[in-house]
Amino acid sequence: MDLGLGNTGSYSLRAVLYLAGEYGKGRRKTREIAEALGVPDANLSLLLSNLVHHGILTAAAGRYGGYALARPLAELSLLDVIEVTEGRVHAETCLLDGTGPPHADCPVHDVWARARDSLVSTLDATTLADIVPQRKAPVSAR
Image (cartoon, rainbow, N blue to C red; front, side, top):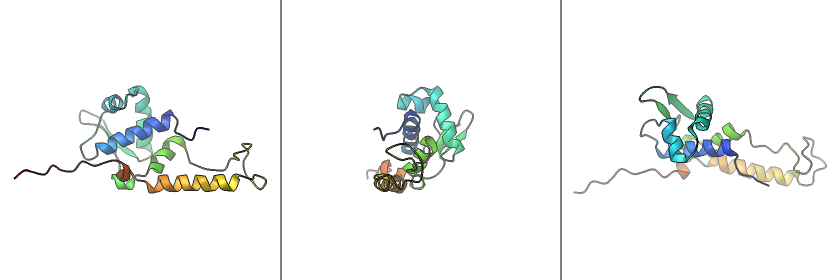
């Protein structure tokens, strides 16, 4: 069983993390982001547009345009980005037979729901500020 992200989620999260590392340094063009991540910029353009649509990124056209985070790093969680790109993390489907509620006969539903809740809680509590190192201003020599 793969609990990882698909390509859409992976590329989107990687782009957001790249922009988090560039936070406060201006906007970045699609081509620059794609080259830094090693992904096709045609695919990335659609993903970046989706992130703009959902308020994760801002975009501006033109010579000085590009993409940037829409909010400070401490206000964007991993869950925010993942749910925009992969959909809501939920446990409504039975792990054993793929059916929906009710789960009265499923012996693992409660365990699976607790595991899901723990994952969601951890992703929601982890902000970009928690995982992206910010460069400190250089100390001047005297």
